[in-house]
Image (cartoon, each protein chain N blue to C red):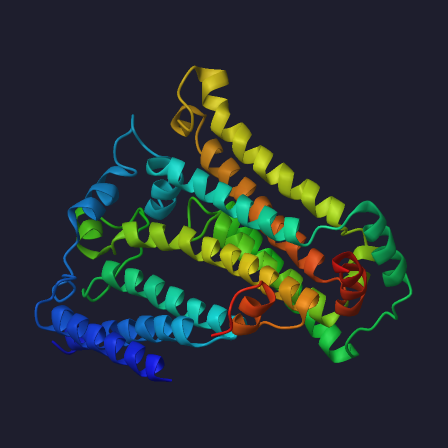
Length: 254
Length: 129
């Protein structure tokens, strides 16, 4: 208890100090809100020079996939590592997987009432179309692959809640398929990144060499697929009913 | 003047949220509460970045070129794109980290029946604080 008070007091002191620095001294420089030189450089160079254009009137996408393309590429790998970490914790051996499937087949198929299901169907169609438009117009309007993938993951979560996981699995959305789709998304990204080297003799991620907006469009679509199915994979793995997983796992511990 | 005051006000609130998050992560022993406070902290930091990139001009534009705007006008009105590009990836990576942490917490609960950090220390052979 005494430690809690100590932590709270020291954080409060730090907070007061930072408040003083931000308001009176204006260390963040937000009072006048000038455009910083770096931001001005990106705004004025992203689409201006014909030879050096990033093919994207949206400056954020130009930064994300063109100026700082390697940053985003490695962010994709960080995402990959997080998904793989989650999956490796939730992994099952072949016998355990078969046991889980046998137990799941005997589970009753519960879903919510008609009103919830109909509303979910309507909302899911809207979310999917919105996310597709965010992803495919990512280089023209606000948005891109990351945001579209997150929106799409929300749509699948809604489906999980209103219908059950088993309904989706009966329709063919199994773990094997989602992992394959995730790999496809990553393959699209890697192919687009390598394409300038193989086709035009440029450097890795030099997507200006590809004709028109192909590079940005491919990267956005690849990121959209990767993020959507990466999340969906973990949701499916987490969606195994609690008691089945416990039953299978506790045996392993003993 | 009022706008600048509002910006300061929001900034201080966000800093308060950051410190509240640190306090929660440091003092709560329930893992789920720790994850929630981590999220509060992360979202406050992301919003702080967006706020730093915002500009106090009246018709403020998103950083997207349009044909009917002249270039000088665009530079005068557009917000800073750099913090937005930073936050864009940070949000998704935050969500992925979230999934990883939640998965670990759920798996630990399934195996040992607790998400309390003190119990976890005991189970792992350490000393209960």
